[in-house]
Image (cartoon, rainbow, N blue to C red):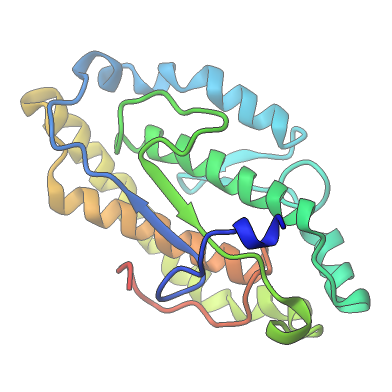
Length: 216
């Protein structure tokens, strides 16, 4: 019954991200003090991740075992049992969603304080995988290695996204608006990052991530 309630597989790549563009004046005060305002929710995210999470390259990194993403246990279950326990998937997706909301807030994409459970304006969607029919039991052993080209490209993209966020910070303070082109670029980098995570660490798909910022 729980599986029948799962949202339909998103179009395009099996990990989708969209962030509602704030077509209004953003809060200048919380924007100015964003690096301080984020501290309480960042502490909660760090505690949720068992102390293994941290800010790296403007994105939250996740520990490989219990705490953040259940990566190693999931890898072993797929390898030896061809099974992805549903509650493990729900936990992993919940961590991804929460972390993405915190990242979006830190990147000034939205000014609502990140919720611990509601999607708000940050929409992350992926379908529960059919392991026996849709995933190779051996691929999790090498996905992290196959994703190396993405890591290299993302290193440059994340740097560019940081620069874009700094420019947006000044723009919001002066005009109250996040420049639309910069907004789409930063969301695109986050989307790229999530697709690589879905492939190499969340282990929900064997489909290689596209080298693209677009939602398609």
